[in-house]
Length: 235
Image 1 (tube, one colour):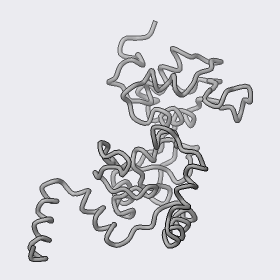
Image 2 (image 1 turned 90 degrees about the vertical axis):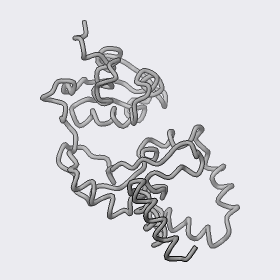
Image 3 (image 1 turned 60 degrees about the vertical axis):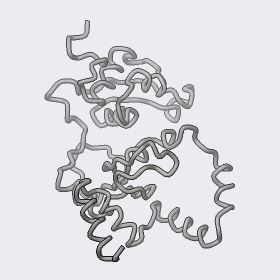
């Protein structure tokens, strides 16, 4: 019997805790599940896959088809249930603690824009104007320990890029489909795209950096800046 308040159905709990409880109560050690089934259970929560991966540094062993070839590509195997992260004394187990100061430094260093796709805080996505960019901090390399993260270990990402590639679009494009669009670009644009690929990030112009800084300001301040620039240009 699951203790009251400690059910994965309790939307008041954090996503990582809900995922852990769901794995404990619905799957159990030795059970096989799919990412789709997990996301269907924990609906409305952000970064469900990432929160599942965050259990690994807390001693949870979750295998993929790379570890167990008998699994299908979307299947996972819960080998070991680790520390009970739903208990207060274990809730930070395996997590890197990022201070607000470090988070602010990373955002400022990266111009308040996603280093993966280049979108600035608060602006709509080019392919989905109904969705607006929310910035978060991600790790440059997947972490394995629970030590504190430093600014050089972190990168500014939008919530969408922070997720796995299957969440970037409704239907993941193939290499051939992307290549077709690459070949349609002008040579100058192809060269710039190649530089982004090699740097694993989009270089921002000074104009884009200022735009990103502007977007992270509160609405009232944005309106004031717009009026100031309007007056400066004599519009």
